[in-house]
Image (cartoon, rainbow, N blue to C red; front, side):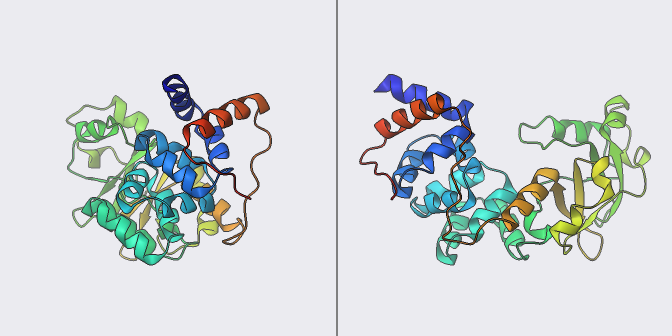
Length: 274
């Protein structure tokens, strides 16, 4: 049993998408019990690859503390979308289990309509002031959870967007150079209230991996990634609640069969969904 569990966990880590397909085939309570019994760092990638409705069903069968740990380990825009699919009481209890700053970021996103830029904004994207040095930006970019950026964005004292510094310029500059001396102006941006399908048409995506999101005062409140745009548009085209998304059919049969067998073995009292 121990060997099977170790192999299953290794497969979860290496192939979260295939694992997600298997977990979607079994009863939500059994899938949730299995995910709640493993490290959030292993559970989260599989949850992130599940269809939104299947992932939300799993979260409903977890206690709020465990659900919060899983949500904290997936991209913020995706976690926000899953919170939208939960009933308000459970969503509040999950938010209560999260660190205050993280919970407030989710609450800001939830305040926007699902089809808007604001709903898919990553509020954790940092900005730097004009007097900050290159070394400050480089130190942040070395953080384990820093997103992939083509530029860092520069703001003035009141956090209004003033410019951007390409990563190539940043890497070649003196560490003590102020970012305000290196930035190009103006920097592109996306308005927080803009519909997501309109944001997807921005020509700036040709040159930027992340675009800053600004409010009505041009204050930067976060960033919009290409992956967030893609997920948001995919979500808008999915069936309404209660309609199942078909299981992906093109996975290798032997691989799925092997994982399925091991997963079923490890799940006590597992039952197939009708």
